[in-house]
Image (cartoon, rainbow, N blue to C red; front, side):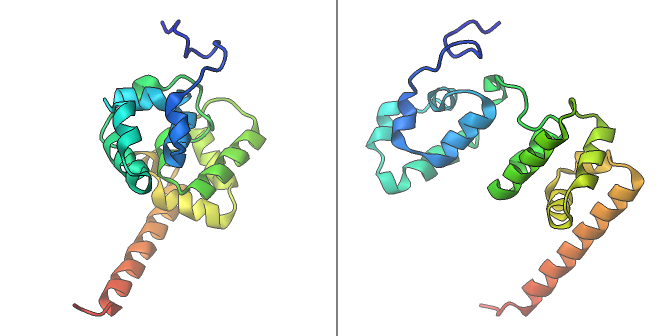
Amino acid sequence: PRGDAAGPSAEPEADPAAEFGMVELARMAQRLGCTQTAILEAAEIDLGVVGELPEDMREAVVMQTVSRVDLNHLRRSPPVAPNVDETVLDNLPDDIRDEVIRNDAELGVGPAGDDETATFIASLEPVLREEVLLTAPDEIIQALPPELLQEAQAIRAQHTTRQAAAAARAPQA
C-alpha cells in the first residue's frame, strides 16, 4: 500500500526536479502520475548531479538514463486513455497521443478489452488510425479482429515498401 505523501489522495507536493524545466521528464511524470523527482530517484540520478549538467544537454542525458529503467512501479494513476493500451500511447508522437487521449475521453467508456480497443481504433479518423495501426506493438495488432489485423498488416507492408524505396533512392556515401 502506498500511504506516502506522493499518494493519489495527498495534496500536491513540491517537486525539486521540476525546477530544471525538462519537458520530456515532466510529460513522463504526468503519464505515470508521479513526480519528476521520483523518476530521477528510480533511475538513481542525483538532483545535485542534474543541476551540474550543462543546461543544453541536461534533458538528453537524463532521459537517456531514465529510458533504461523500468518505471512501472511508479505508476499511480489510472491510465489516461483506458481504452488504449499504454504501450500504444507511449509509442505515439506527442500530438497524436494527445488526440488519441481526447478521442478516448469523448467515448467515455470503461477499461479496454480487445473489443473496446478495436472499436476505439475503428472510430479514429483515417490518418490517426493509420498512425496507430503502424506504431502499435505487435501483441496489440495480433489481438485485433481479422479486418483490422489485415488493415494493419497492409499499412505496415506499404510503409516498409516506402522505406525500402526511399533507401534505394538515397545517394550512397
